[in-house]
Image (cartoon, rainbow, N blue to C red):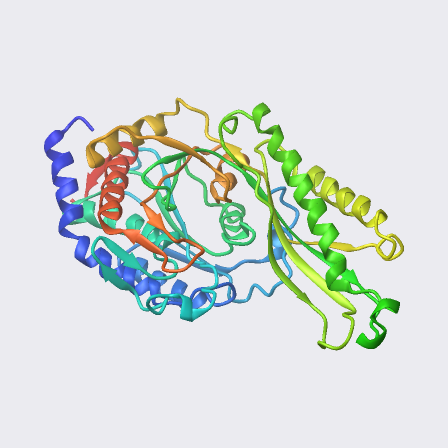
Length: 429
């Protein structure tokens, strides 16, 4: 931004609105928007955007509309409450470049409540930290998108280009929410997703696969356990084989641009196990839910086939499993990773805005976690800047986000909007 006075005014406006932004963020955290329960939080954001005179759109994800898209992830749950919300700003005269400000409303489960220092849905302030489930991942980011626009409006200014403010679901499990927005027709010249990235820009991001492995056993009374087959214990060699595959995939990092120096980019997680019916009965069934990442450029279907082959090979080494092979169910993320190539105009403007707001150079990073940025990068050729505040404890206990970092990131977004979209005066004059 060449107008230093306007730049200072925008950052001052962000600062002046920060108390309201923090209150808004805390309101968002109070909604327990775990999978299947996002609708009430989405109702809240719908009304908030509507009150700002945006053109509103709200819909439940329709599997039939997206299941044939190459970015679709298989889903086994009801989407009745998987609500997406989009508020659209349209200028009086389209002069600048269009923008999507995206964020996800869904949060992961809390885990045992007694392991939190404070109730997870009662936002708690302590020093520079806002605590609560979803505070960092990523309700602070959603609020930053909204209040960056508010800061401009407080100066009598608005983007001189179309801006879509998106609040989506399913980011934590399929990515189908952002995909549904794309299929519905929401496109722009660039996108920003303020995920909790410690004030850094994501350069490369892995893809993710979710799958469930079902094993059947032979139930008998424990007094004759040797004549049965324990389904729970039968998963142990399968898990071991999957970890061997994980090691193999990690060894390939030396051939993967941007991941050569990453210590452990491919992470397998056995995130859930269920099995058996009775402590004194040899269990007849067991299911394990797993997650593993894949490098950008790797085809999810090909790697899924490799996982199935790995499990078949492990089963052949087990006398029971060889005749009772495990079944694999693909039940979530089936997502490819992406790389944000250097040199785009969008990145250059983000670097400038970051310097003005943070007073230091923008750093980039790679991340071994899923991001909705892949929807924009892979399927719409849209530069997506995943860049957000400093957080700790996301997906764990005592999740928290830095207040000063939120303010600086909001300032960056507001400055970016001013440069990327251009500005015009609000009102009809």
